[in-house]
Amino acid sequence: MILVVKSGGEQALPDWQACFAEVAPQLRLRWWDDPSVDPASIDYALVWDPEPGRLAQFPRLRAIFGSGAGVDFIAADPLLPRNLPLVRCVPPEATQRMGEHVAWAVLSLAKDARRMALAQSRGDWDYFEAPFAAAARTVGVMGLGAMGLRSVAMLQALGIPVVGWSRTVKAVAGVDTFAGAAGLPAFLARSRVLVCLLPATDETRGIIAAPLLARLPPGAGLVHVGRGVQMVLPDVLAALDSGHLAGAVLDVFDPEPLPADSPAWAHPRITVTPHVGSLPSRLERARYVADCIARFERGDPLPNIYDPERGY
Image 1 (cartoon, rainbow, N blue to C red):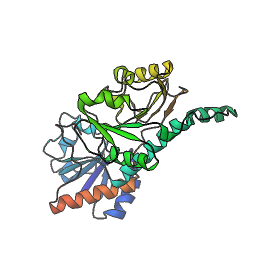
Image 2 (cartoon, rainbow, N blue to C red):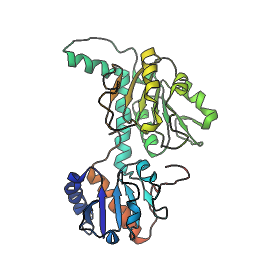
Image 3 (cartoon, one colour):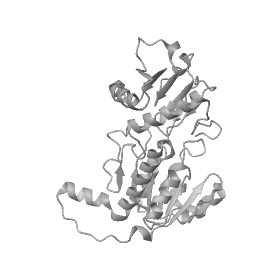
């Protein structure tokens, strides 16, 4: 079986090959643009941002695997073979890493880690007392899928109160949950730190914008680890400059990479991370894809299949 790879650039292929050799030695890995590979011989594809139309050129292709939890770039292909399963990469390690990232971001806002980092860069002993403990601020988690639920559990383990919001009603132990447009205002009013973990859909595009931010309590914090297209960065900057937002940890942007001249880089109340919130190692992703292929070959159902009706 041949698996073509387009993730991390051609220089990443030897690493991918080493990872798959450990977990699925029967698979033969080839680079996406390897001219020696007959397109008709390709069984599976592991991709992040394939050129539109290319996947449709593999007549024997049986399944497509995204190399991340989001498959926006793949699903946007107008010629994508819609009869094939498109599998989102959500290994157990991804949810754990996201929970760690969210917990770190929430604690960073509570401790004002950005202020300390800037002081260190200046060699300035900027002594200050944190005005509140993290457990004194309720965190609102938007998106209660696998990533959101793991983040909720890790925040709760730190003693931090959590409320949750999702598109449809969900019950989560120890969490007041809200759903749909009707439940959003009450949820936002209680979110002293807002964590966005929503999938990219038509409904969530541009959701982190002035109207939503205005509903947060004054001095709230923002942790954005959903999708870049959900955030209107000028509105976030304006809320920070006015003091309505006290700080933000931003992991996703539109476009990416974040341009060098973006004001987010130097803003004193923003911590920028380069879309690494839930990124598992290549070995972890290889193990997940290999397990999915083994399931598929046995005729078992695949997990985390992209649903175009839901948009994730």
